[in-house]
Image (cartoon, rainbow, N blue to C red; front, side, top):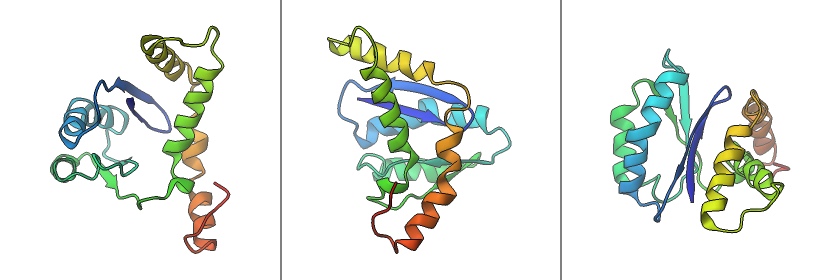
Length: 152
């Protein structure tokens, strides 16, 4: 399993998770990686942080940390169970597709990790801008569907 962070302009680190992502482990990742990434990429405090509401991300310790440490960025509260409008899923799909196209294909867990990290670093500059800019269309589609399924 991996954890990643990115903005429409920059790719952050892809972190290998050797164990299940618990609230405490997620808290460690936030404190070790998120704050520094947000301060570099959004130095004027205009960044927004979005996560996909996994149980570890909604844990009390992670929620409390975000409340206490997000003065340099805003934490965007994402509705649960809404993958249709979540760009995180698009990015992960693109990453997995890039790994599947690699030759030779990864055969061991270490090969897979290397392929994930290499593919992550090979995303072209500006790649993330398109999914991020699609957010207004995603929200409009969701509103038209009154919260039901959308084409995203």
